[in-house]
Length: 250
Image (cartoon, rainbow, N blue to C red; front, side, top):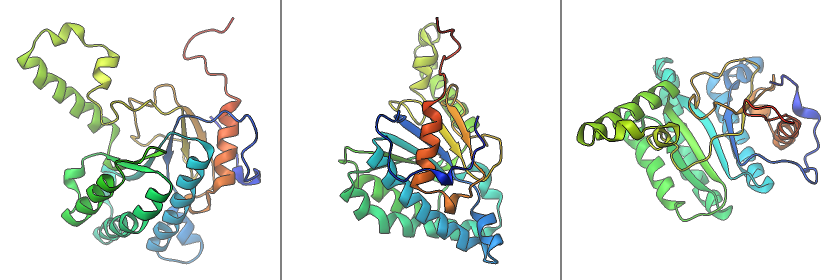
């Protein structure tokens, strides 16, 4: 786990850099960024969308295949109603505004989480964005919205149990690979690198099943200040890790 401050990296990707196929990002620090500037929290969230745009573009340029960003957790519904409403409206605005850019950059949009809990307007905008980019073949941008890792595992177990009631033989064939087919991310490789901005050292219920062997990179940089240079620094650090997956290298 790294706690380095990545702002010193070059904005150009070094030759031969080992780039993860799937990166997960816990985008933390919008509120603190705004508070430090004497601004309302909403200003921090807006600044955070600019950082998201830059990192999506950078991931496409660097050859990342999947980028999963933690947009809104299941627990975030407990925030003040005014802030939640603003975040939902901002999601609508961002989705509608960015669709053309996503298509121009061949980015496919997906979403995971309890999307049925989203306000109708927000859910409709999100689903339209997913449909409009479904034919793109470059980077897949996965928005984790109304998402919780524990809930995902419970929902997967419930889905398997329903099928097993009709076909009890499934119980004897269940293994980790088969169970993964019931997760939101079925068909998507597990993240190799998870980045958390803002300095907190926890995973916050993010991709609990999928993160079993992800490398963790924690930086004090607040999300609105996280840029391409910071991303490259994280990827460079990832490239130095000795990934043994519980085994011993001879």
